[in-house]
Amino acid sequence: MTAIHQLLPVLSPGDAIGQAVRRMRSAFLEAGFSSEIFAEEIDQRLVGEARPAAALEASVGAGDLVLYHLSIGARSARLFAGLGCRRAMVYHNITPSPYYRTTSPRVAYWLDQGRRDLARLAPVVELGIGDSAYNAAELRAAGCPATMVIPPPVDLARLSPRPAHPAGPPRLIFVSRLAPNKRQEELIRVLAALRACWQPEATLVLPGGWNDTETYAAGLRRLSRDLGVAGAVKLPGRRSDRELGDLYAGATVAVCASEHEGFGMHVLEAWAFDLPLVARAAAAVPETVGDAGILLDTDDPLVWAAVVDRVIRDARLRNLLIERGRRRLGDFSDAALEVRMSELLDRLDLSGQGAPRAVPRS
Image (tube, rainbow, N blue to C red):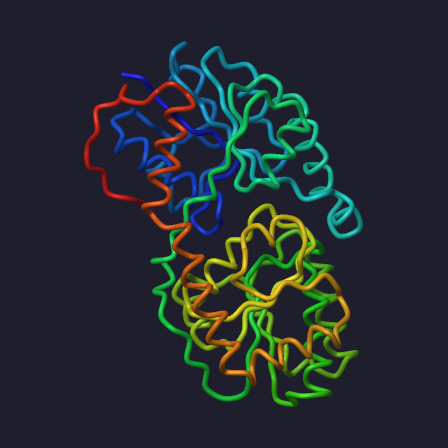
């Protein structure tokens, strides 16, 4: 039986790549292929779902396929490059290292290494898979001979989605790790302008971890104090799925000022809670959002604050954004994923080579 295995540096239950890898494995198993996950580091909660990367080479035959998930430099890239089987790559994009050079030189090093890995691997794989057309364009620029787009599989059920019903003053939310490219500082400036001009009781919650970005997180706290909004800005750290769901359900507007996103999973999460979206028109965000949000090409906090206030006050506009978000979310449904995974097998000349069977989704 042909095997389709996946290799990545770190398998974690709490990030978008870990979720995508597990959902793709389920799809391969359902199509009748043998499929395992191999990783350099495996979160203790997922030990039973993956094997050490070092075990991969002895587990593949010449006719098998290995998908490598690239988002940062890692030793597993060298392992992947030396495999004697068929190879394809899933590219989740790599944050430009200048964002991290003062915040975390260690992370900056591995981001630069990731770019070198991209340049080395893209020309030698059969197929490059981008989370977005934005990512696929980077694959082609790196010399990838063939590309396609498969948005990352989405597991929204883990958050218990339901329509948001905020109680109290307006609350803005952006869920992502605290990192310079995410530009959380711009959202703090937006909040200060919003409170000063239109919504004096508005608050902002920024759930997300800050491993390797402690100095950036400290800078966000300092900026909040300097702007007089420290009491209105919450940095609760990394939260459980249940806690994240509760935070989304208590929000009024989802906001995103990120300058670099290869896709933007948080956008889909916001739509799952019927939240209207205001986002910066940068990187892959416009592609992901489509017409289901207000996209701004400025970082002027007064402009942002005026738009957010309009979304809060204008029920007609708010309802329009919510409805468009619901419709756009359908483009990333399980049914849409099945179509794309079928197209992937076609592109790899693997259609019909498995023995389909029902497999519980991760």
